Amino acid sequence: MELEKTIGEFVELYENFEPLSADDARDPQKYRQRYRRLTARLEAPLPAGISTEDAVVDGPAGQVRVRVYRGDSAAGAPCCLFFHGGGWTLGDLDTHDAWAADLSRATGATVIATDYRLGPEHPYPAAFDDCYAVLEAVATDPGRFRVDPSRLVVYGDSAGGNLAAAVCLKAREAGGPAVSGQVLVYPALHYGDSLPSWERNRDAPVLSLDALHACWRAYLRGQAPDAFAAPLLAATFAGLPPAWIVTAGHDPLRDDGLLYAERLSDAGVDAEVLDVPGLVHGCFRLRHSSDVTREAWLFSVRAVRDALAGAPPQRS
Image (cartoon, rainbow, N blue to C red):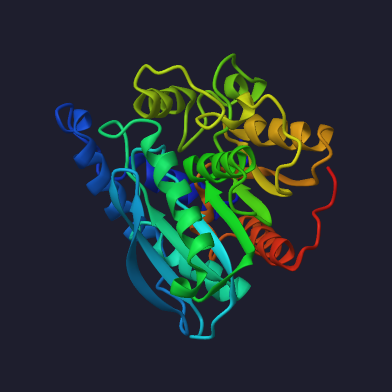
């Protein structure tokens, strides 16, 4: 496996960072604390010129925390809803703080990140319900967030990519808010029979197949998934927003993204894929230090801009 030097160093740090004892490994809070320390080690400072504001919206089980990033105070800005990754069990507003701020700075959009509930304590559909509640809150009360609801995209990495795709499905099914585009970074979309990349990359760095299965178990807690849990189970993909998808060559989730793009295209929905052989799962942490990752990051930035401008992706 050939990796850019910076990505190889990231893999070494990720896999050797603060090993947990056997007792700690059974405690989700210990994993989350370790993940916060790891992401703090990896992330760059917030970019200059971006302000942040924490707020709450009403969700199905109480208030859902969000963090709003904007470059100025002008009303009617385009909006990007940001759903963080972490296998539905890790991550929060702080672990993806700089990423969301960078996205606002690079796109000119107001970015709204969601602090959804995590498994295994809060299994499906908790995270999905929280994310959809934020979509509805922003679309129905845009003045509160000073955004233009007619220019709204969703963006997510890994489990966050799953949630971004799932809220698009729900919006279509329920006649909910219009979404201009979905930007998915190495998303987890498939549950069921193994895909070729699952087997080919079963021992991939950062996210192995065993770790992927553990994430799904924590999210579903024994439930049979529906399409809102695993979007590739949808009966039809027609009528969904255009999609821009980044996949990583050394990632069991590679075929999740490729298959989703194929299903969208077969249904007449524009979908564009950037499939990068030299990437590993989680590599967008290196968007400022890795040349190959920077190109993938800039693809996702361009995707947000194009979606907000109504420019379609190139058909894959």
